[in-house]
Image 1 (cartoon, rainbow, N blue to C red):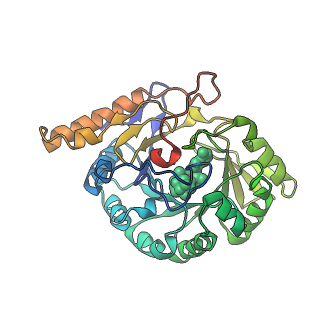
Image 2 (image 1 turned 90 degrees about the horizontal axis):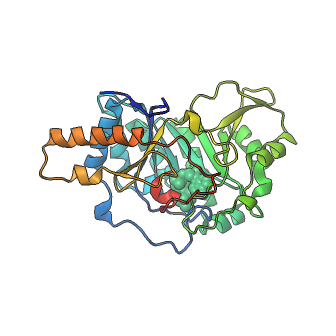
Image 3 (image 1 turned 90 degrees about the vertical axis):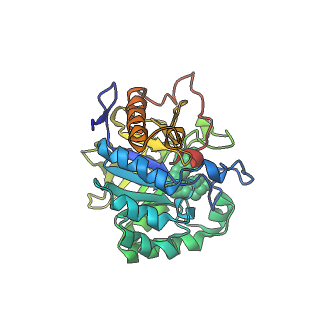
Length: 333
Ligand code: SAM
Ligand code: SF4
């Protein structure tokens, strides 16, 4: 099968797969505390449907799959999903982004099933602030989950942190000092206009420039020369080998090197987090008038069409920018 190359010659190798839109936290930049517009269960792709899509994607050259959500560890058969992906004819590199709450229980079985890496989201080291930022008093569970991930052998363990003005904006140095001591790879992510409440404001976003300046007050940062398609700009800390990353999606978009596609938990393929359009794969997967071969051929053709229709950039900085109708938790971050 042909590679997924768009009209700007970007070759797509990375598929982010959302397993559910539900979550056990309510991070204020992602989901309002009273959010309840969940997708009905029957609209989510079944595990069999998911594996069919991922199998086709890997035949088109996708070699990295990241499981995400919502909170992917809430998917009851997450271990079996991981095992089935690793058993595909062209097994991709497999990682997972999680809030960490389920890791104490699941890190070991996930590692045994073939999961290689985890990204754990943690925005603060202060328990009270964690509670305020997520509406759940679960800080200790994240720390326990991180320890379980390390014990299980998942490596590297990356930490994703979003800083918010007037909330945790002063924690950049503290988070890095902690991550260095614990040997976690820390990446800061600029807050993006993807919240369900539509409250994002560029003026209050903690920019990559500010994060860099804060970190530089304590540490010497030197740019890592090769970036490739990674969303994070990486820096050696005090000459290395430890690094820190900053994902400046808003202030320094990196769309020119983007190799990512996204599959929502209800089976919609997106070429960008910020796309206004989605390609319906679920409808094809459930079309009982087609044979298995016809379904595979149509899914394949929809992957190619989605990639061919990908725009040059996400357009966050254009005057005409419109926030996608789904929040990050529903698209899959
Ligand atoms: N629930 C999992 C977690 O939190 O890691 C996976 C899904 S979450 C949507 C994936 C990542 O997106 C997290 O690191 C989270 O911090 C980030 N995220 C969510 N909303 C965001 C926003 N508005 N701007 C920037 N990052 C965001
Ligand atoms: Fe849940 Fe992750 Fe969104 Fe936080 S960022 S509310 S953990 S999906």
